[in-house]
Image (cartoon, rainbow over all chains, first blue to last red; front, side, top):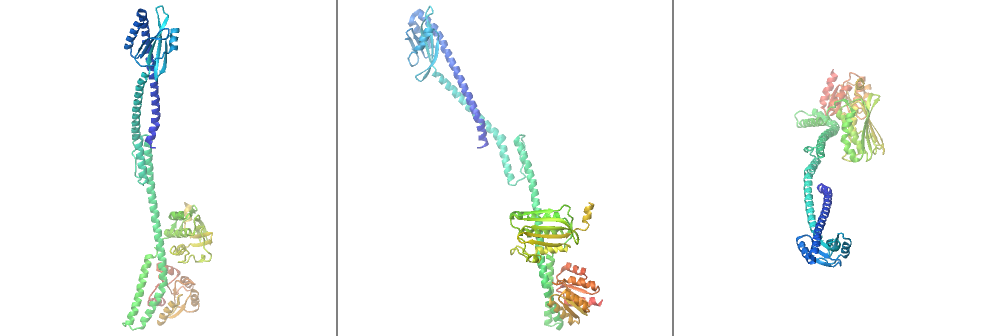
Length: 494
Length: 118
């Protein structure tokens, strides 16, 4: 049910009931008033007829009275029948304008003659409501000799009441129609239209149009709602922009990290290959050089040998330029804040962890000293370890990254541990996990270089990396990196 | 001129020996670091050519140990496509010269003659 229908029902129904009640009350009053008027009219007419009839009877007897009554009746509207009764209760004079039940209300007539008091009553006769008024008739010395009965058909009153009823109904209808129009107009202008604007605004907001604003022209609750809407839209816009910026930043970082990881893998592959082919190439060129010394210069054989040596040089050039492209940029070791490195990397794995139902958390000790490392390489290490931990951990498992200060034989430093509750590593494969190209991941998923590269990075900075694992219980990788020289002192001074 | 050649690859050793001996250089070949250090103790050697990557003992370890014992001994480190960092590491351990495989054996000969002439 719409707001308009509801308000119309809520306001209109009681109003209609009230107005109808008021109308009925008015009709009732009208009826009482009409009846009183009727009775008074009949009463006055009866008084006049009574005096006139008594005089006529005294002066000219019944014929005179009959003439008089007929004459008077013709001139008095609203009296439908007049009957005169003598002492024997038989009508002696009758004049009638209407066809009405001729029975004589004997008890009443007798009572009037006996007591000399007037008597009025209503009776329903043949489907018609009839008003009787009976007055006594006195002779010259004041004793009652008969009675005069006046009758008025009160149903005529019904017609007038019907007119009044129609009047009330028409007025009531007009009033209700006016009320309906008024309510509709007021609702439309002050409620429905602002709400429709609010709804349209919300729908646009829902589609992401956060620049949607509503005009705040009212000072009522709907105006407050519009202002609140504008505030919300503004905040949503700000939050959305921040979110977009944040995800763009995370995406960019992820892209950089992936690129670095790809380059690291390509570099490792290329340098491994280069290392393997270097010696055989050297053997070929060495033998060619030896042979060249044995043959006279300028012969076809010496030219062949020169071609071999030149082509080996060419291969060397090709491999060197390949290595220049993929060899990672020389690391720039500088003091790194482990907390910021971990916090930069963690968001990259949040969605993967959530998708796999794994809880990913970090506990970084406060006041952790900085370590010496290349920031992007340290990120690379943390990424490799978290990737391995997540890959090894089934749903409802946990991966925890911790960092605590720890002194080793080589001096003060920081321990970073990545612990998972995954399937663990069998004791027989554990010694091989740092070997390049060693992987237990499904074909195509792991390069087998993650731990090898991580170890290279950590060892190059004078740190070390160790791994503990228990099959079915989980794996912990512990990295130790030396503290940046003077970091403790500078922190102590600060 | 006597040169100790240390490389875990026998074919490489044979190649260097074949070339250098034709150039009247006496070659002592060893395939591992421990053997090489032992030969240095026993034989007279004018210069050492050592491969950087060897399974039993890293070439740089051989360089470091030999350098401690014989500060003036010319030592040439050879390695396959090592790049600037490998060269820096070799120099830091005390290598006198550094050559990347594949190098010209004539170039090696030139380097050895230069180093021993001093």
